[in-house]
Image (cartoon, rainbow, N blue to C red; front, side):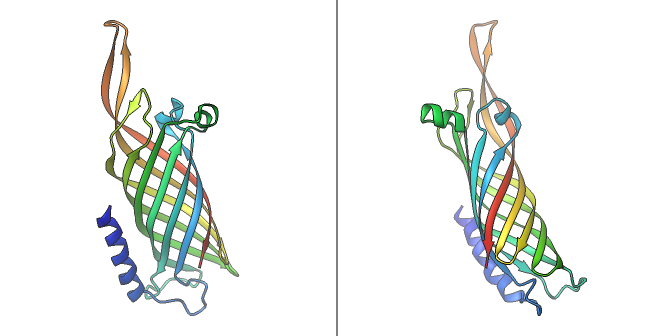
Amino acid sequence: MKTFFSIAVTLFITLSAFSQNSNNNVFDNAPYVRLGYAIPGGTLKTDEVINAGGQLEVGTLFYINALKLPDQLKLGVDVTYLSLNGLFNKKSASENNETVSFFAVGAKLGPCLSYNPGGEFITDLYFKVFPNYFIVGQKDVKYTAENQFKLGTSFGLNIRWKALMIGCEFTSNNYDFEVSLPDASRSATLVEERAIKLPVTNISLGVNF
């Protein structure tokens, strides 16, 4: 993880040096902080292992003003220096005061296309790679995993007005699990290794400076 934080810092310095704020201030570089509610999907959601979560992200959107586009469009690079993500089962947490939990800590990087329809409204479309370290908190009986490093993807949409930012993001990762399956023929339990896809939808509210 130290490597990726070092890369994020290097990118911040480099992009700050080569990007400039726009003349009309609509497409200024935009540092941001946001909090999100996470909605997991896939097998782990279907089997009721996890069903909710949260997200905290800190980053900056750097615009490439040297690239000539129509006045209402601007291409940039979206750098998320820190992405903290947690998933759990809120029913188990409320009823039993304990829950299976998974965490993903990483950084994100990718292109962003921004559109200004008028005034101070801006819409962002982005795609990012998501290198992350997957941390297992309390383990599930059926699905077990070790801490692991993986490379995922992210794409989404922001709607910004002045300092406010509302976002919808979709992330996808494949993590290695050991799945315990009953074997009725031998009255035993089989353990099968699987790469399980974990898609997550994040609905966020944040501020950009």
